[in-house]
Length: 345
Ligand code: DAH
Image 1: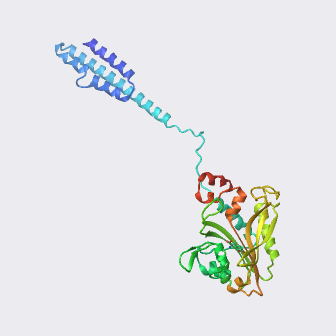
Image 2: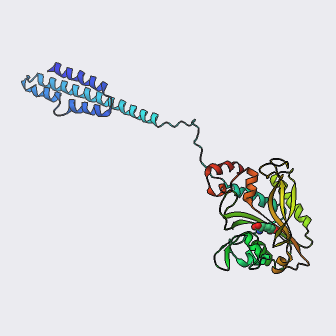
Image 3: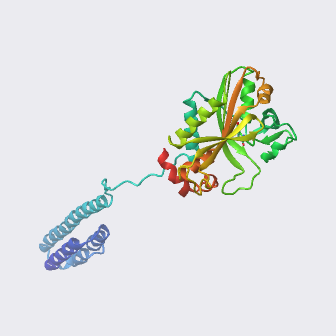
């Protein structure tokens, strides 16, 4: 019996030493120390022992039990510590790994161009004005010397909402509105950027909705040379100091005389290429001296005041500046296109 108990102790301690995890260890505890375990089984034979032997055997059984349970306890601590170690190792953060770059947005290329133009004119003393996109026929046409039935209205196919209201076809109505606000007193010196709408079919160079920037200066003694000087500064700042400008006679009902401005082609330096259609020049904007009728209708004395105005399309300017070949790129918002302009932040 004594031997059997010793054997059980050795056997249990061996198993404990080999236990791989806490569950296995618990199984060992249950099987050796439980009520139906082998020690209890051995002790059932105590009845056959002499009264002298019995307490000795009881003491030995307790020793064996104690040895097994302290073995289990010891192993339990080891396994627990190992589990904590493993968990810590698994959760280690490698602070030397490079971070994942965050995706940030950036401004739209057209916004960049518009703000660049705004800054340029603000630097020359202009203020920025805005006007409504749903505009009265009066401001969009009539106040700009385009009475109802005027053939030049056909130059701008319009989206009418009612007979009196339409989506503005250009930013020129802001001229008429601003002049009206000044109640016949100069000077006026504004630019107004904004969206405009035309009943055009969209293609590489047309969009039913696009941007314009309008400029207007009214004061005493404003002359054509002031317009030319202003446009020259604009062209050089926007497209490079080596750009030349050229004014060609044109027609707009709200200006007299009217001109269109070209800049010398940057790509071929005026020699002629496909971008400038072999002319060496690229058309940029329309301009002219404000028509006396426009001044008078807005309450300005055209004998005292003169002024100039100009209107341009930021899309066209952005297309030339960045070599974009299709106006629709600005509106379809393909991030692969837009991402190319993130350097301008
Ligand atoms: N409003 C004209 C257009 O949309 C552009 C323009 C031409 C504006 C001459 C002007 C100007 O102020 O003087 O075609």
